[in-house]
Image (cartoon, rainbow, N blue to C red; front, side, top):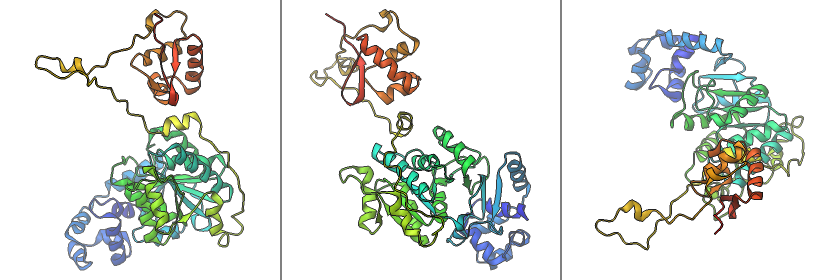
Length: 413
């Protein structure tokens, strides 16, 4: 029977809602597999859906079963008793789920989605981490998309509380995406599970991520938006949540910051305002009196240097243009656009440098750098960069500027 479920769920052009139409009429995938085109038309399927079902090849489904067995990936179909009832009751549930790790008993646990923008600010990242930690401490299980930014930090906070988490992926569960969140992926598999509707080997696309958002909200009692601009994939999840009858919460943000405009808009439209994990979990205490407890913890949860380096958006460096020189015929435009270079020290002439110090100075030859940018470009670890910069400042080879920027010292005249 499993191969027929995989056959139905992998038909191109059918989609989750098309799968539900098929199951409503035929009751079982095997019956749909054995039916002919006339039966499909009687089921009022579209021409595209009928064409998708015309492909009766079972080699692909059999290969998926073999791949999952080799990679310790489990398969769950809608006919299985442990398939989450919450998910089964949404308009377009995934017919098949693939997961690695241990799937918690979803319907008997207070699952809460915590999501945020990929381009979160320091405020958004730290708030996501703190809320994830607090919700977990209060007895909740955090669900998120494991994306860079707010999603990953919410899962990090929950994992640091020693609780399971569920990461819903927009690719196969054998693919770590983004690669910078490998540590979150591995910890999630150990303590909870990563889950997807896509077979192993499926790479992420711009279409798979919005689709997976309905699973994030479908598994959860409510969705907490930490930080999101007006045009954001995060808000797609809240649309699904409202359609599914889930609660929507939002963290208030700075009115002058674009990355908070979407979450603030949710508050105007009636989302519940939250400032702590308990603001969320107390809504479900009567439903889960033995699971949920009031613990005001994690107020001092902070971001590490490495977390900021991995999640904060890169700062675009612009080259100033010398506008005092007007372009004339015969002028070399490139030469005009190059600003006058300050007379910095020559790195090659400096004695007694460690390997890390030389790497940092080499990067700074291209101009001033932010600390995070310097860590990325030099390939030196955050701790070693900070220690080396301290020594370089003492040696007067490097000057620290405002906003955590560094540049080479100028030559003495």
